Image 1 (cartoon, rainbow, N blue to C red):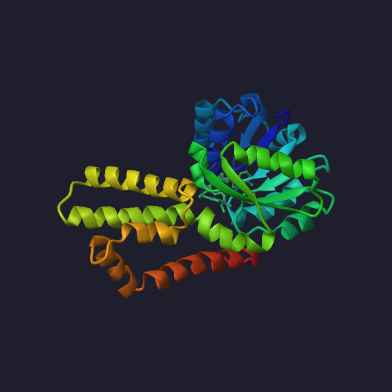
Image 2 (cartoon, rainbow, N blue to C red):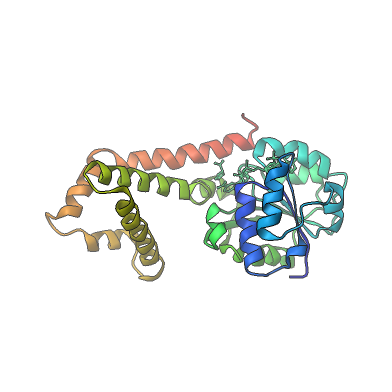
Length: 272
Ligand SMILES: NC(=O)C1=CN([C@@H]2O[C@H](COP(=O)(O)OP(=O)(O)OC[C@H]3O[C@@H](n4cnc5c(N)ncnc54)[C@H](OP(=O)(O)O)[C@@H]3O)[C@@H](O)[C@H]2O)C=CC1
Ligand SMILES: O=C(O)[C@@H]1CCC=N1
C-alpha cells in the first residue's frame, strides 16, 4: 500500500493496530507515523518495538500523511478535531477507532468535503484477530473504503456496517473480548476454589475458548446446536447450564450488552 499512515494516539488500541500492519508489511515501517499527547516514554517504546517514526511534529505528520487515524479517548477527540481542521485537506482520509464518535460529529468539525470513516476494531488486532466493523461517511469514494478494509484486514476480519449499528457493535465486538476474559477469570477462579492449580486451569480454559471459537468459525453449526451437541441428558453440561439459567445468565448478559451499548450512545451525546 503506497500510503503514509499517521496515528494520533499511541495507546492500547493504536499499538494493537500498529503491531498488525507492521507485521504484515502492508506498508513499510517508515510509512507509519505515530504521535500521542505527552507520554514520551510510551512513544519511545512504540518506536523501538515496531520501528515506526515517532519524531515528527503533528503538523508535519498531517502534511506527510495520506491516512490519519484517530486513536485517542473520546473525551480528547473534540480538541484534537478542532486542531486538525486547520491542517486537513480533502486528499486525506480520516479513520476513527473512537467509541461513540459519530461520522456526523467528525464531518461537522472537519468539513463535509473530508472523507471520514468510522471503525470499531478490538485489541485482538495485536495478533491479527480483530473483528473490525467499518462505516463510511458521506464523502468516501469506494476506493477509499476499500483502502480502509485492506488496512484493517491486516489485523483481522472486516465487515461494512450501517453506522446506526455501531453502538451495538461497540458493545459486542469492541468491548466483547473483555467480557469473554471476565468469564474466563470467573471460571478459572471457580476451578482454583475447587482445588485445581491456576496454571493448569488457565491452560485448559485458554484452549477450550480457542477450540470453541474455531468450532463457531468452521463447524458450520450455529452456537445453539454446538451447545446441544455437548449437553448429554442428565449429564454435567446440563447441570451447569441449569445453574446459568436459574441464576439469570441471559438477563445478566443482556444487561451487559445493553449497558455497553447505552454508554456508547451517552458518549455520542457528550455525557461524561
Ligand atoms: N482499548 C480497546 O479495546 C478499544 C478502544 N477503542 C477506542 O480506541 C481509542 C483509544 O483507546 P485506548 O487505546 O484503549 O486508549 P489509551 O488511553 O490507551 O490511549 C489513548 C492515546 O491517545 C493519546 N492522545 C490523547 N490526546 C491526544 C491528542 N490530542 N493527540 C494525539 N494523541 C492523543 C494518548 O496520549 P498520552 O498518553 O500522551 O496522553 C494515548 O496515547 C478510544 O477512543 C476507544 O474508544 C476502540 C475499540 C477497542
Ligand atoms: O471501553 C471502551 O470504551 C473502549 C471501546 C471499546 C473497547 N474499549
